[in-house]
Each structure stands twice: as structure tokens, then as C-alpha cells.
Image 1 (cartoon, rainbow, N blue to C red):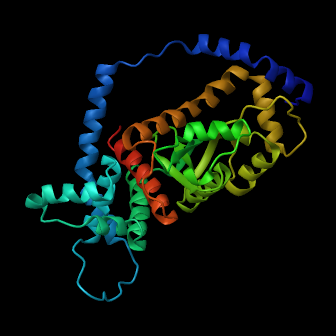
Image 2: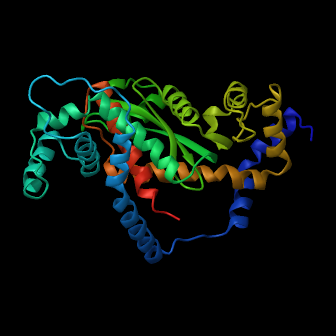
Image 3: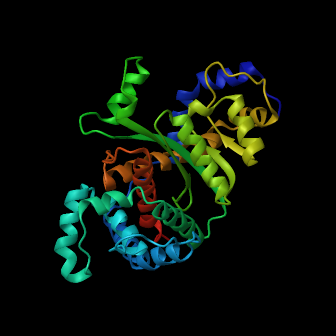
Length: 333
């Protein structure tokens, strides 16, 4: 089907009416909370039972050459360090508080370390590699290869005095904001499993985090069949990037009010689908809500703040957030 710029802009102007019609067609799908809570409990029980063996396998896959350590041997094995980092992120405790907690559990675990030991874990390059191995291993266990994807960005505050949402709104309004007080994060999700297949972190921009997340998915061997993103990415240059770099056949982006049909064929095909069958197009596009609910889920689990300050520690803390997201969905059918 051929489509003109006037048709595209006319459809965009009627978008509110089309969305109202879409809502009528979709209907009201309210969640049965009792059944939902039972499902969550069942999948968490299944996931936690697999966690320690998965961490052990992630360490076993680590191919980095071990250097002879100088001084006293480490108190914790790589498995213990990885588990400690995961638990610290989940409990959202400070290094000192987490050290106190290990003292409480030392009678059962034989692990008792100082807060400095926990702090250093976040800068440990080998632990970073174990975390990446764990991410790949989780994708393997869910047999994720080809996906219908959705993506969204968010941010995490690095100080208790400033909330990311407030600072982001200041930037939208043109006011001055301290970029060093929060970080940007981007998550690329498989719609069907709700797994994060790629994620990125940046101190500068959501765009930089976005590119890091897309690269991670590609380097993990993931094929993206379709993609849904917000309007920021609804421009010809991004559509060309998705087609040439990732060979994505189907894109579901909402055109801007000044959209034009000029551009690559992938852009024209997307606009034609938007104009020809807008309701079916919105059914696909609004699966992007999975990204928003996933980010909300993450922040309820691990909080809206990251306590670390050094860049490599901040990035590792954010990686732990995404690992917990996938671990929580590991037991889902």
C-alpha cells in the first residue's frame, strides 16, 4: 500500500479517537489478584531453588586466568561474592548494614566479612564477568533466541535528596539539573517471557544507555523480530538503524505530528501499516506497556536509588537490578 504524508498526519491527528476505539475493542482485562499472588509465589519458589546452581555454573564458565593472589587468601569464593552482591541489591542495605547481616547469619553460613569487603565486590572485574555469564545463562535456560521486543528508559537517583522523576521533569522544562545526581537506564524486554535481553547504563543520556542495551542484546545472540519504542525513536534515522544494524522487519512506533513519508523503505512500510490498520497497529504498539510495568516492578523490588558512587559500581548495581528481574521471571511458564 502506498501512503502519503497527508494521510499519515491525518491519522496522527485522529489518534485520540482511534485509541478510544481501541480500548473498546480490547475490553477490560482486570487481574485476579488472588490467582496472581499464587502464581508469583509458585514461580519465585521455582526460581530461588535454581539460583545457587545457576551462580555456580556462571562462575564455572568464567574463563579468566587466575592470578596468584598476594597476601591473605580471600575469605569469600566467587560464588559467595556473587550471592552476597545479589542479596545486598535485593535487600537494599548499605555496605555496613549488609556486613552486620552476614554476622547474624555467620552461625549458619560461616561467612563474616567487613563492609569494605562488600564494597570492593562492586569493583571486582571477575564478579562483573560472573554477572554477565549469569545473564547469558538465564537467557539460555528460557531458550530465548528470537523475540518480539519492547523497550523503555528510566533513571535511578544516586542521592537520597533528589528523585529521578523530579530531576527528569526539570530537564523537560528546561531548568538546570545536576546530571551527577542520577543515572539513565534502558531495558530491552522480550514480550513473551518478560525477560530483559539487553540493558544499558549511562551518566550522560538515555540515548547512550539505549545504544548500550541494544548492543548487549545483539552480542548475546538475540534476533529481534519486532520492536516497540516510544515516540522519541520515531524518526527515519532510527528506523534505518534498526533495519541495517539489527535487521528488524517489524517496527511499531507512533509517528510524530510532523511526520513525512520521505525516508527509507522500512519507514514507509511502518507508516503504511499505521494508516491502513491503525487498531491492529495499536494492539501491537501498546504491548510496550510491558516495559513500563517491568520498570515499576524493578523499583518496587530494589528501590529507586543506587547507593554506589563510583561509575563501575553504579553500573554493576544496575546490572544486579536487571538480573533480579530475570530471576523473578525464571519460574514463569
